[in-house]
Image 1 (cartoon, rainbow, N blue to C red):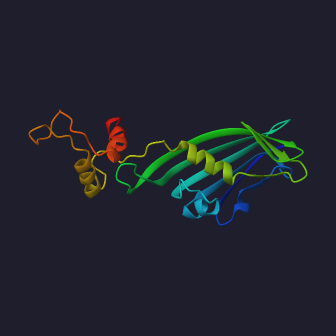
Image 2 (image 1 turned 30 degrees about the vertical axis):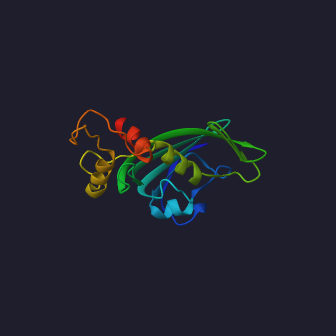
Length: 189
């Protein structure tokens, strides 16, 4: 087997661009780089994230029995702030590795992906999207002072605690039950 490394950079405009011909690999290592923009997220029909700008570097190393696939993504995605509902930019960095092997049918099992030997093609689009999605924290909140001020004002207005004399303070006045759950979220931050 040759020790040559091929590297291609691709602008994404179809999911077929993410096909890797494992059967046709003539070298020990192949690397590809994809520019992932909003168009990529539309192609994979991703709900979150639906927008972003990342570079995904995919490296496939041929071993005696399998293929080691490494996917590294760097860039940002646009998500909705849980507090003010405005869009926010969230930096993403991933570094994931899995094994691909030939088998009878395409199948996904933990960190091993079985690729149909008759086809010999591994499409990494969905895997890249999954790795990016898993890198997004459960809670997305702007940094202090960056939330939409109008929404933050309304949120404070509806979650304010008043004392018996009408001033803000520690004695709790029952709040509207519809806001109780939101208050719990805010208290945890």
